[in-house]
Image 1: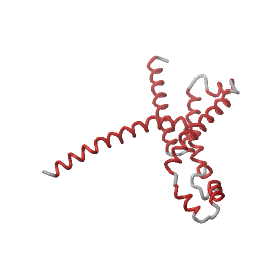
Image 2 (image 1 turned 90 degrees about the vertical axis):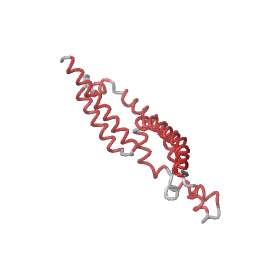
Image 3 (image 1 turned 30 degrees about the horizontal axis):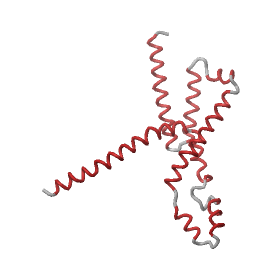
Image 4 (image 1 turned 90 degrees about the horizontal axis):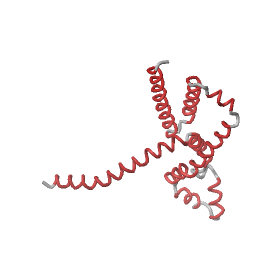
Length: 179
């Protein structure tokens, strides 16, 4: 294989990797777990087919490494989900009036509050109501974290600029309308 074919193959694999990574970020952020898993499996099969030595060869020659990597990966995903993603979701979607409405119908406040938080049909943020979402975040935490680190600062910058410039734009509009 000549240098041109080598560089072309490398370039094609690089662009394919960027596209797959983008697809997995999209699947993580739109909570399309099954589509993301399918894309991941197809990518791994393609990678196994296109590379030497094959991925399957590495797995069979290191039988204890893959399960250890999976446990560590899922452990980090659970940590990311609990410490960051679930906390943000709960803060954005909490309804303080939900408990107040429930307690208004019960005399024993302490017992009623405990029952409220344990009942998944009463408490909308009960983790059992969000099993799919939590699983998605744990499986695709790398892609979700990438998007958060890329998207959140850009969103903050855009909002800050708008807040700063909004006053200036208003002054210009007021000044123009007073002529």
